[in-house]
Length: 428
Image 1 (cartoon, rainbow, N blue to C red):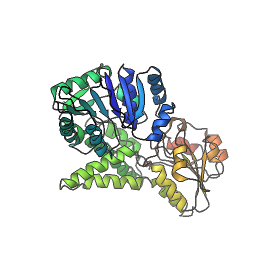
Image 2: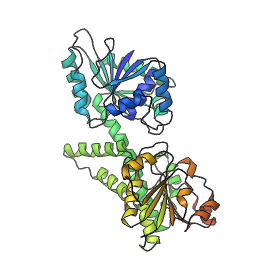
Image 3: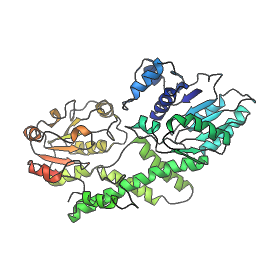
Image 4: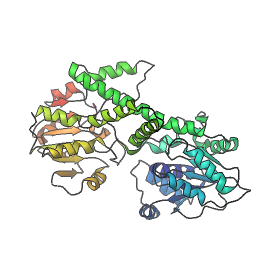
């Protein structure tokens, strides 16, 4: 099929590349001129694993090309794919308005954008008004996991397909057929049900994370090891193991935005969003947890000290720092006159753009160089390369052997045997 896709989000890039990889002719309309020029030059704007290679392959095979936002849709096209940023609702309506009216042609519009609940129904009304045919909008919420986005599209655990049109449901099932072979992962529902389910999933995951962080902080005060508690909770089939790992807070632009969107929806409907508001408040406090532990250990005397941070990306396998816990932590350290020395495998360019040139921020391509003469090391993002460091080398490089493990990836007893002062999250 011919597919015209719109958006410059990670979801837009992944879905366009994945659909092209199965034989479709995909035209990706880019909303940002600078990004369009980069893509046309073969430069991938995202450091998502495998994405650059997949995009390049589809372009070279002439199944994928990039055009400007307002480039007309292909005359043979029947499928429009929207993967716009959440703040681009009006842009979606403008795109529909530009479709050529044809009473003998019906359009299928697949909406992966995370808009307000009910937007897909409004888009469908506008589409039918503009096209003059039995066109349909299908809500296909973006459930990609950043850092594993390609596999989470090609091997999705489930697809939420929101539509009230039988022919549209059949068309989407055909589009997803190459990614739906192991078992039928498609869950059919109404458009607004699918949109709300996406937000509800994010809200639940965020709630579990903040709950565990609250429990971890309580465990610290009770001399309880939260790791034992986590395993005991996860063994209960009513709870399960996923998203029970405490840490120094979660980040991610879409994750936080979805939670706030759900809270705003509750408020607009006259309901109190107390739980979600508290979830976000707990998370913001948690981002400063490692700072508070260090501040307490040093009796509030941090001025002039040097602190190394390993990992600033909001999660492993990404170069993005949107709402990353490390940002709030760095600002708290700066406020106390601390020089911050940072290593991250992918996110240093983004951190440099966020911070600008500062004397109290030094970036290193080698994690061990960041440790020279520091008074403490804070681990914030659990990149696999940090799990088994050279402990003797750490001892030689650091001025004070203080480790603050924001993801509980190290064994406290073993680390202390190596001569370090160890602080985890809820490790007693």
